[in-house]
Image (cartoon, rainbow, N blue to C red; front, side, top):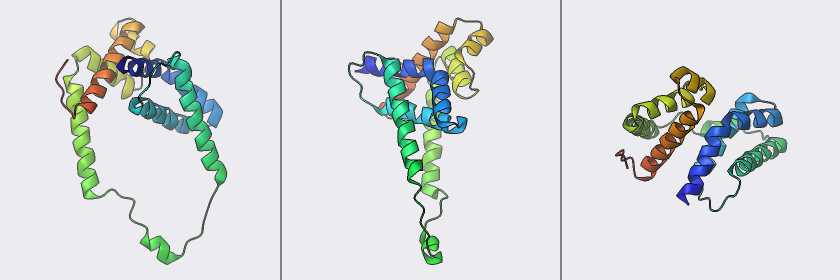
Amino acid sequence: MFKDKEKLLSAFTDQRNALTRFLARRLGCHALAEDLAQETWLRLASSQPAGIANPRAYLFRVASNLALDHQRHVGLGVEVEASEATMEAVSDPQPTPEATALHRSELTHLLRRLDALPPRCREVFILAKFEELSYAEIAERLGIAKNTVMVHMVKALASLERARHDGGRTEER
């Protein structure tokens, strides 16, 4: 099962740009496409796949279904009028102090996990996820093959996923 999940996550990292373009063409909005690509990632990361013959096709099917769900939701166009008293009863959208503390703690754990990665692996991950460089751009910048970039990304993602499931422990396996 872990190998199937790794294949899916590897397919995602390899096809992320193509997936985003696919969603942008379908939805007509690049920002929304980015959001749904991220949602696709979350779905894949939290799934328990078994025996997926074509990870790329599965990835695009998940994204396509999410786009369809979004279009259905938008198509409903449900709007209601609410009285001023009702509007005042709605809670403040700002996060509570507890939620803020929890998010900061999660960020601290993520940064620790990133620090535990091997230096080149961490560098590739940061360039891809934070600087949003393509694998080809990363390969050129670091003077390594694109396949090596993919290997580092798969290793980083798998390590972060393991750390997430291990309750935040960051030791190497």
